Image 1 (cartoon, one colour):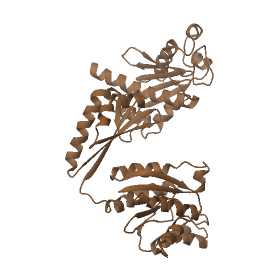
Image 2 (spheres, one colour):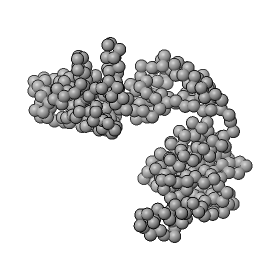
Image 3 (cartoon, helix red, strand yellow):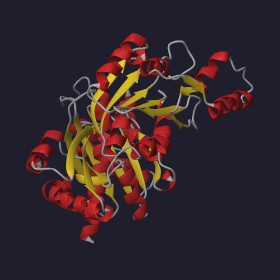
Image 4 (cartoon, helix red, strand yellow):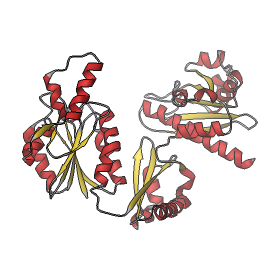
Length: 417
């Protein structure tokens, strides 16, 4: 089955919103073994939408639409498809009752155009909307299957996961089970990663290896097909072992995890507490950790020490250190990490100091960053980074590297013991 995703909405073409729906649906379809060869975006115009449908029908046997199911005049997706397929739009009573109940509960007046949202293609499979009003639907003919989904991701994503995948699974004519596993890497670039495993990618068949780059890290999606789920898992294990023999030192986790999530896991497992002295990151590291429930058992607190005055008077960094070496230096990073772990106190102190940009500082180029790590009972270490990019990218990547180095040093400490 070959799919095309058509996103409907002039706001997408104007750049007012990002088409995140296509990415989400593509990821889900890959897990179902459905190929996605085209993404199309079209405005709220029935003639151009119909033209896009006609083009898609020539190259795909599954077309998934997002957007254009709302109550306003420019929401024309199902009306255009109904005319194109020669089908009527009929009222879905369950959807209408759900819409009426919403307005009753919120004590708002329901206007006539809201009834439009309950119209569905005659003979279609209804995909209930438990997070909004307009239901989705799926209808097919001898040549193609058409699935219509709402535009807002908060409605579309749960609808697709709860009902869309099940409806499509019935259409995929195969006994094979499809199993995917995402390997997450950090500290190696996308090009370098692909170079190291180029031979494996070149000769892939089943399982397949799909490299992806995302926000300063790299991922590999491994997908295996087999009638026996356990055998498919073994197939994934075997190809992962080959990959790890080449780049395993950069692997930090699987699937939807993050560096911060993995760090939290390690800290909780070891019953360790942490504090931070943040200069260029301005509290981003602590923000990452506090986004997880139960962070208070790990993060004791920290100091945003953006000025030299705070570094000296609050944390106690020696004035001579700053005058002799500067704040962007391994010496300053070391003192910051040690001083903050004593001040709070905590088992681990981490510091971030450097040049976020856009201008140089103390003769140091933009992207020069020092991360100090002070672990109780261990010698303080300082990691140097030479980053490139925007101010925000340098700050964000510094936090990721901080998590990455902490995980590595804690793992090494465990091996040494």
